[in-house]
Amino acid sequence: MIKNLKLAGLAALAAIPAFAEVKLNENFSTSGYIAGSYRYTDFDPSDSADKFDIDAAKLLFNASYKPVSATLSFYYAPNAPEDVTVLDAFVTYDTGTGVTITGGKFLSYLGYEAFDIPAMSQISYANGDFLAPIPGYHDGVKVDYSDETFGAGVAVLDSVSSPNYLRGDGELKDNAGFEGYLTYKGVKDLTLWAGVAYDTEGNHMAHSKVTYDFWASYVMGPSTFAGEIAYSDAGFGAKGYNWLALYSYAFSEQISSAFRLSGEEVKDGPGYVKYTIAPAYKLTDHLSVRAEVSYQDYSDYVYDSALFFGIQSYFTF
Image 1 (spheres, rainbow, N blue to C red):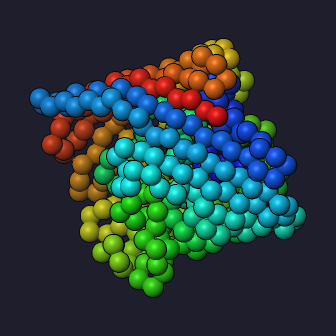
Image 2: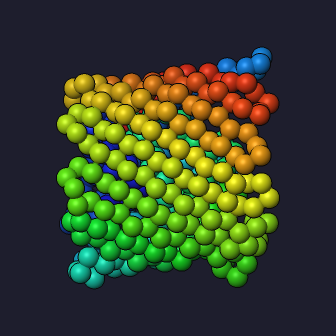
């Protein structure tokens, strides 16, 4: 049970492995990954940067004593606010009726693209340069319902987003957060998902923030089609939307590629359109390599454009 794998369609591709959960005994299991890459970005006019480093490493533990389960993970990323942090830390009670109740620290409902690297179809994210509408981790309580056709959930949180994407702000008094979603799965291989998030005014935020997110994916044989639009309003000019359209194709069990078009528009501010090609090769069930070439065409920004190249490997266990 790894909720972090948000991608519904892409995770089904054979060339994108899921976590290889290792069962320690009937109650405990573990899984995780290590990923590293070389990345080069050439900004126009006349600026460039590169990076050759570990991208992230995650070690996750699951405990199950039905109807209760617990998840705990440790996460490392060199550019994170803390080098090593407790990422997932939650307990879930399954009522046996399709309803689950979860408390602790967990990932936001929002966002089509995954948080965890093995579940992504490319190296870079589609959006978020300016508005960053998709939240990360936070603390709270959530109630979810799921059956073969529908899914729904609501969450009360310490915050939806915070200056540290790996955790919330740690209190309710000045800036509580709320999330909710609905999903429809009644047509084979089609997923429709709609969600909303609201941060009240206070603490690290100078204004309340609301985000609406809708995405859809459809799997047709070796092909996956997906689209997303996220609208965010945080006041003081921080208003706009992000969008993406993605096509992914598995040429074989080992080879796949993603083709993505995305963009961001900020009211009275900068924006861009981003073009991405990301082929991937699965060397083994546990080791994969992907590459990416992206071009961003900016408007009303310090840079006119940016060309990105990266190659990434990741090992799952």
